[in-house]
Length: 261
Image (cartoon, rainbow, N blue to C red; front, top):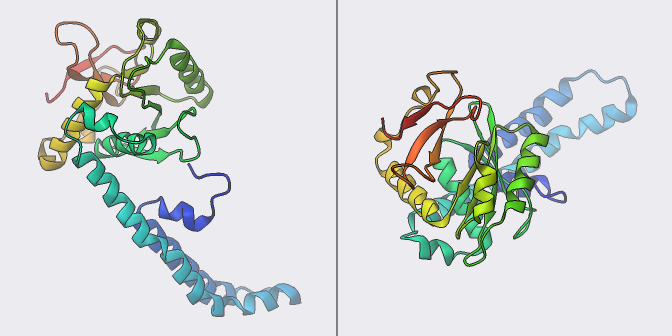
């Protein structure tokens, strides 16, 4: 999500690099060929339209300028994931790098990621994830010692309802209180603690290296209701900390599938 005062060039620099190329091409063709061909009756508007061809080249160049910045920004985020070695390296990141690390990790998992750059170090929804039409809201808590309490889970649950999202994910580099864990039970709320995040980073690193092992989107659908399966981390049971595919329609649907199956 762009900042309120963010101009179009700043917004394009945060998009995939090819978006700038597309916008540049559309602007050039529109100003150079389409606008002059429109039959405009107003003398004033016709005068403005006559200047459009002269603006086509400079506007096209201006809109393509963010492309290299967007490309190198994407590469920087990819390297941010690849550089992590353990939980301590994750905890050493700044809050901004921490959010970008989480966003890139989910991007590698096939989600469309929108970063809320205007939120600050501790402000509401940090990421919006989309996959197969489902929206997931993410809040990142880069807390090393303080535990994330139930208040955060309640706030995110309220935002999920307000935005009609399929679920929320709260990620911390530390731990959650027991009250927060109890509140998240039987709700579409994923609480990801520091050690689980470290596991997620390791998985995305291996996934990039072995992309052939990544489940296809067509394989990640619930066999009971047809909804999308999302990757979750077991908090209890025989294999706490292990990952599994769970139905995004939980708690209405409780279907699960072993990760890698």
